[in-house]
Length: 220
View: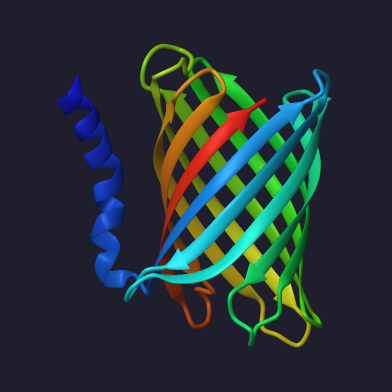
């Protein structure tokens, strides 16, 4: 069994590790995520994240807090909106306030869950307002049985395309690909490790970043 999980891990993460020669930045981003609902159609998510670049030593970039609310509208769909505040550890750059609206269509096919997500972001940084239109396709499935029970592993992956527009600036495009491994520690707690490769502004001066996202997810 141990060798089986090792082969799964190697298959998932070796392609991302092999991108070392084409990565400009290595980013570590731990997070704590809390989800709760009112036993109805409303669901709420809160998150606290910290981001650091580890190219040459450990350099903290920012900390951010996120609050999201979503409402089930039926037919496997949800609409939602959220707000994020980002505190930068750089006095030369303004803090960021982000507003987000989204539509999600998620459905299970046997033990495979597929989700389509459309988002519209408004990023406010000082006097600058940036709009981002985003589409993400994601999937996840358990490695044991049809559902993720306590102490069991699951796989997750996603691909996201982003269009960016700002007044007096050339439009930009980002592309993100992620793949990861998660484990249910109990019925309410999950631990998830996801590697995400980002091509940022790839139609102009491209920047490539590898994100290592370690998240703890708690459901109330």
